[in-house]
Structures are given as structure tokens and as C-alpha cells.
Figure (cartoon, one colour):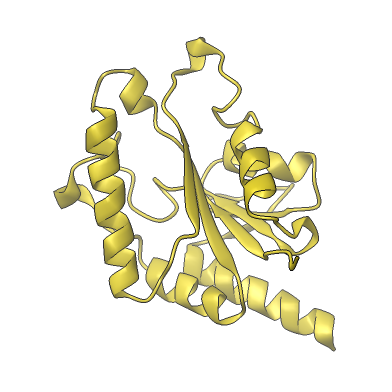
Length: 175
């Protein structure tokens, strides 16, 4: 069975602007470069899996139904631009729940790797916080941090910049 090249994406602050516990459709605003970056990566055979902490559910700020409504709306808006998300894994818990799925813990990543036969050697994790790249500490998945500098990870401005970097890296390896 062919392994999938995957981009693990954080949601809030990576794909869409993070206004704090975003769940209302009218607050969905894609970060500049998101759609174009994802479209470019799709042409190179990458699939997308979103791994997202959604503690607003656990805090009672919004319900699971509201989260699902927002998520379905976001997926439809992405589909209109030709972007398909393979899967979404979310953690509804708050930190003090001490669950195994809240990033930087790795359960959701490993569940996704197993479910979708992920090619760890040729996959990336992209997020706006170090915890979004936690899987990079234990695997050969490469990490890209958006919006801030890091001594440990490649830093890029947005998903378009990250896509251009990944594509350049892939082309360099073929030479």
C-alpha cells in the first residue's frame, strides 16, 4: 500500500485567523496565502490532516455541535477553492484534564499516522506554536513554525511561504 505524504496542519493561527475560540462561521477568515499554499502543495501530492486543540468545547464556550458546524463550513469553503482536507483530529479537553490527545501530546498524530498510512520521512507539521510541531521531536516529520522565529524549526510567514519552502526542498532532493 502506498504511503501518503502528509502535511499536519494546526487550525487556528495557521489556516484561519485566531480570534480566540473561533467557532462562529462569520469569524472564519483564512490567513493570507493559506488557500494558494495548500493548492500548491496538493499539486505535489501532499494530503492534509488537521490536528487541533479545541479547548473551547471543554471550557463550555461552544458545543461540539457548534464546533462541527464551523468545521463543516470551513471544509466547504476550502473545497470551493479545490482544497481537500483528508481528515481532522481534535482534542476538546482543557489542560487540567491531562488527556493524551491535547497537543503537545501525540495521540492524535499517531492515530492519524496509523489511520492514513503516513509516509513519516516525507511529511511535515506546520503550526503557529511549538506544541503544533511536537510530533517532530519523536519522528522524522519535519516542522515549520509560522509567524515567529525558532532556533529549532524552519520559520515562515504563512502557509504560502511554507509551501514554497517545501516545494523547493522537494525539487532540491531530485537534483
